[in-house]
Length: 302
Image (cartoon, rainbow, N blue to C red; front, side, top):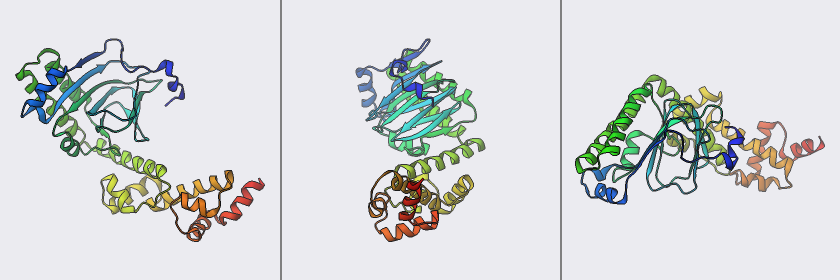
């Protein structure tokens, strides 16, 4: 994503030409909450942006609803808890409630998208059914047109009819939209892309937790795969095992610390999740060919 998007004067949250937007009033939301059926899953906000250059939304503490974004064309990116995901045409994004997030349109090819905020007693269960979470928020679909039409049906329910029957229809049509996304996500192309995203999320998780000793079983569980399947997919992507890759990241950080700081080998080891500095030194020498002390001397000698 181009850094020029970080120019605050070019950030736009909403107000795009030909945008559509419906925000349910507190009274209508209360009616949704009181309905035994609608209260399970209901929409609080819905909108569509046919073209959204410089679109930028950042919420440090998230919101108390789940959010669905669907990219109809163009590109963008989303960051959840400091993990960044690229979003392209045919990609749905689910943001769980109360999760810090930032999303923005690509500068050269800004996205066109629709979005929905939703709440209800069954939100957590629905996210489980969709198999999404902070590390796996993307759902790729093979046929965007059927998803677009399902959205239009949902929007029509909320834009024109807020009666009891209209709210019930909204609930039913929204379930159909989510079901359609789930079904379309099951194509072979979508599954392939989902695997790539799972490995990308694991790599970014490693990069954000270099101070931890993370068991391989935990990495596999977070990706939603068995250890054997996760290891195979990871090796296919990186030509290394997950454990070897994580060690490489740690040693790369150690090299930076040895060169740029005066921290002791023990301090650097602790910062990278190694409680035993001698074990850390052996790992370092195995990867770099020299001890940490010798590496520092060579690096600083130029």
